[in-house]
Amino acid sequence: MAADLAFQLYGTRQAEPASRILKAGKLTAHLAGGNLRAISYDGVEVLRAISYLVRDRDWGTYDPTLANLAVTETDTGFTVAYTARCNGPEGTVLDITAAIEGTADGAMTFKGTAHSITGFETNRCGFCILHPIVGVAGTPVSVEHVDGSIEDAELPDLIEPWQPFKDMRAITHTALPGVNVECRMDGDAFEMEDQRNWSDASYKTYVRPLALPWPYRIPANEPVTQQITLTITDSRAALDDRPASAGNDAIIRLTPGTLTGAMPAIGLLITPEEAKASLAALRQSDAPKVQDLLFHFDPIAGHDARAFIAFAEMTAVHDGTTTLEIAVPCKGPLDGELQEIATWMRAANFAPNAIMVCPSVDRQSTPPGSSWPDCPPLAEVYAAAAKAFAGIRLGGGMLSYFTELNRKRVPGENLAFISHCTNPIVHAADDISVMQTLEALPFITRSVRAVYGDKPYRIGPSTIPMRQNPYGSRTMDNPQGNRMPMANRDPRHNGKFAAAFAAGYIASVLNAGLETLTLSALTGPFGLYAGELEPVEEGGMRPLHAIVKRLAELAGQNWQAVTSSAPDKVLAFTVQTTAGGIAWIVNLTAVQQSIDTMQLGLSSLRTHLAPFEATHIAIQAAKGTT
Image (cartoon, rainbow, N blue to C red):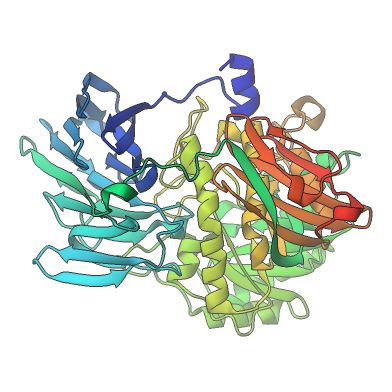
């Protein structure tokens, strides 16, 4: 890919390492960075990944350089071997030796040994196995435990807040009729977590139970060996033993669906740090006319009365509603803390239409086995907020992610709305993993609805860069603009990738009946306008700007679902506006996609979508489907 095109698409000229496709009979896998992805049998994905990972004390993932890589391929299988080194703090090192083998009978092993001459601190060292979610959620599995017992169960459909399975030795699921897949894990006790909590499109089986202390230390000169064995049993008759054809159709077909609803209001995040730049941007003629401005206020971060003066200036030039999200310190009497904030608001003549409160400490995750931090009962927090901000719509939930809301379910009976965020780079930041998080969003929204019913529901701000890290002491600085998990800046936010991700995001959550969706800030590293503090005129607009601006114009209009024959590549929906029907179509991939839109009744037939293209096309009135 040419450097200029790569920059337009990804916001960086740094290319991801190319994967290598390994084949053994009907078994295929992509080798990338020493790990296996898209492990498929007969064209059907059976595992999303098998990875050997090392994480630091903040759950950041080491990215060691491979050495001595040797790949051998034959007519009947393949072998891979390599070594790698992780350089930890204070001169500590961890060396990894890996060996992979695949055979034509549907078997594969992945063995890894970690050895340190210094001793090495880590939160996790070993294998992670990812099962896909689409078509697998809610289906039967057989789990063999460490003690040899067998549990017949199902992979969760609604998202489990805690581990669905513990003390695992093996798990078997059905990939397609007549094809069973056993994944056996030796060398330690494994357990599974529902990674849809973090919007990952997978169930993750990982080594070392979270109930054990972390971080922990791998002793010097004591090797640790683990092995994953994949065994595929194909009991189909020989006549039914055919190469995969489903999903290989080069043309993606879009057909009208049956689900309908109203487009959500669109919001933009405003922080005190970006208030000056955001005000300048809001005054621009090309600023999106969003329905809501979401103002962030965090006393622990040093925000004080001056923030409300800046917020009030912005409300004066904004035609829509405003929401204030407060990270409540909970360091003293709740009435005193919240009344002080209310006094500052009144003094600045800042009167938001809604307020969302969340204890500051609840932004930090409480993993299994951890002690819940001190925090007043949420009912008391909400009561104090209702008293301090009488007459203002009061919402609750989490300023962090769905994970935290799922683990600490808030008492919603007296709340006007429920809110949470998502982030796609918690565990992985490669392009495919980020785009795949869109698959998890319908499961997230359905899980929220299962708990809170038809309560008004908001999501956001949800951006590719991470604004806060509930799982460690900090977000990761990213001065080189790498694809990095938990990074507070992400190069793809500057490219067409982010625009396609945002269009795919709203297509994935429409059925949730959201009240408001916030996909970006106005300025700064999460913003529609490039640059942090420089004048807007010098910063320019990111591709995401056009998507958010157009979505804001569609707020409140009726949408209708569209079914895609390849939803991992192309998503779509239609909207009925006063000017007629519009089809929104987005290419989630970095390659051109051919599409068949005849059943949507487009007035301008489009047969091709460019990489990460998000387009909207008029629908003929005679053939309108919305």
